[in-house]
Length: 343
Image (cartoon, rainbow, N blue to C red):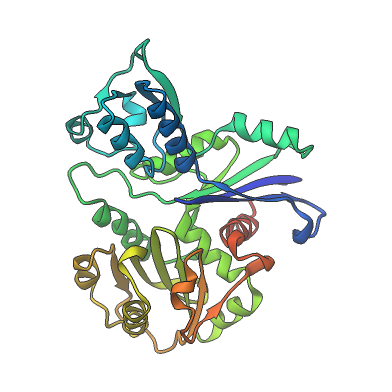
């Protein structure tokens, strides 16, 4: 579709990085925002209500669960936490386990509790912010979040990496399959996000980072000939891709807090040779590693994105700034994916 104004959001655990793309404007002149993530905003609101001594009722829908510590601190203060069944999914796939943490799940809001809205995308917030800033309302929204998938009773590390294995095995690692008008059924957080944004497309944050690196013409040229290793060192997760042409030939994902420079460089060296074992990554606290069976030689160029990229400050890697702004790499990736989809 043709869109004159497109609101593009990369919603992470620490920040949400936003580009208001306006047709006819140079990217450098399009409005940009780096705001606290929705999960951080929810955590801040819960802490306010803890200080006021108020019970809370979580309502809304599945979203990033980075406010768990605030919920626990609220309970430790002797205050009650209630949650609507839909909102409770932000705290875990298994609602019995959520109840086991002392959360009272009910569809009826207690009169004594202050309500806290859970959502990755609040249309009213964005309408208000853009209106007060004197900016155009969007014709289209593109957004990404990290989704572990809905798999009650299973490790979310296993379930999340199963997503990448399916992308490799069933979609052939095709870059054109990374954005969704209709996300996979098990990707419940993406499903909620898709419903919230209205007209638009959604993707995983890892996919957006990958496409963001390829937004750089030089990186895309290297991918087309020799292959490139794209690494995104996020606040919570680190993810890497082996890209050759228009296909992903390998995916590696770990938790950033478990990595230092030495370990990460060792993992990446073996990953690009197809020698890093999936079980080794999982046993180390990560999600996993998968590569195609006949991985070609190459991928010597390593390009790095992400807010924690300083982890490799002394390594022989390249720090990218697609579109002139590293923090908006995911937004530029979504923009690239949308343009190429011709949607």
